[in-house]
Image (cartoon, rainbow over all chains, first blue to last red; front, side):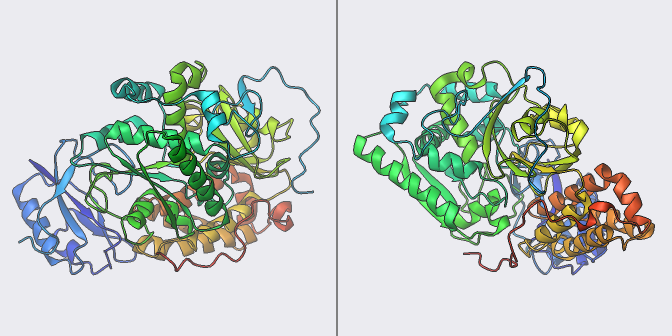
Length: 96
Length: 446
C-alpha cells in the first residue's frame, strides 16, 4: 500500500505549517505556499511526518491519498494526466 | 491594414489536407447538412438516420477507442479513457455536455450547437448509454451566445420528444460567463450546486465528482464527434486520413473572416488553414489552441500538421482549435502582454500562486513589450512564470505561463531588441487579437 501527499490549492492559505512538519516532502514557494516536492511516502517515518502535517494544516488543505492503481502518479481535479483512482485517508485535519 | 492579409498570389500545390468552410459547405463531415441552422430533426434523420436502440455498446466503445478521439475543449484528454473510467466507477455517472465556450475568440461550439443540435444530442445520448446513465446536462454560459445555443438545444429536445426519440432525460443549465467558469471542474461544480469555479479533489472526476457521483464533463464538439462516430462509423468519420479525426477550427486575428469556423481534416497543415484564411505565404506568427495557447512562428507553422502529433513536435497542442494570426509588422510581445493581462484578471481567486503570480507575469510581459525590461527583469519574468506551473486547481496558471514562455521563444529576436531598450516597429501597431473590452474581474460564481 502506498500513499501520496497532495495539497488542495483552493484551500491552502500559506500558513506553512506543513513544511515545518514534513520538510522532506514539502517546500515553501516564494509566497510561502506549500509545494509538494516529494509526493511519495516510502518509509514509515515519512508517512508519520506527513500525517502530522495533514493534522496540523489549519485549512485542511493537505491530503494523504492511498494510491490504488500503484502508478504513484498524482492525479488532478480535472482530466489531466493518467487516470488514477485513489481515496482520501481520513478527514483532513483529523489524522493523527 | 489589420485583418487584410495579402491577396493570394501563389496557388500552392494540391493541399495535403482538407480545410472546408462552415455549416453546409461541401466536403464537411461534422458540419455537413444545411447551411442555416438549427437543423430540424427531419433533415437530421434524413441525412444520418436514427440512432436506433439497442446500440451495440461494446462495439461503440471500441470504435471511440480506435478513433483516437481526444477532447476538443482544450485538455485533449483521450475520450475513450474518460468513458471507460466512468463506466468502471461506482454509481450512475453524471453526464455534462460542456458548451460553455469561454475562450474569447472561439466560436466553434456555438456554431456547432446552433446549427447541429441533434448531432450534439445524439452524441450526448450515446455517451449516456455508453457509461450507463439516463440523464444528461447540457451546460452553457448565460451570455447571448450561450443563450442562443441552449435555445437551439431546447427546441431540438422538444422535437425529439414529439417524435418519440428514445432519449435520456435532458437538463439544460446556464451558468456564469467568467473565463474559468467554462473549465470542466468549474462546470461540474456549478451543475452540482456549487460555485462555477475550478474544483479540486485528489480523484479524477470520472471516478468521483463534486456530488460524489462519477462525473463526465465532455466538450460539445467532442460529444458531437461521438454522435457522428455512432452514425457513420470509423471509416466515415476518419476517411483514413487523420490520426484524430476532423476538427473544428475558429479563425481569429489577421484573417479574411475573423470568427469563421472551418472544419479541418486529413493531413491538413496550419498552412492549409492559413491559406483558407486568406494567406498565400506564412504570416509573422500563429497563436494556436486558445489565448492561453502556443505561439508558432509563421514559416514553421506553415508546414506543421494541425493534429496532436504534428503540433506536439513544435511544443503546441490543438487546445480548443483556435488559430489566431499575427500579421507582419505587429508586435507579438505586445499582443502577448495584452492577453496575459486579460488572463491574469480572469483567475477564480482561489489558489495562491495563481492570484499572486499571474499579475506579476502580466506586469513583466507588459514591461517587456514597452521596452522597460532589462536582462535581469527578463530572467525574473521567466522564473516567475515557471513558478506558477502546476500550482492551481485548474491549469489556468499553466496556460498563462505557457503563452508567455512560447512568446519569449518565438519572438526571441524581438525580445533581444526590447530588452536592449529599442522596441520593435510593431510596438505602435493596433491590437490584433481582441480581448473582451474592460473585462471585469469575475465576481459572480453562481
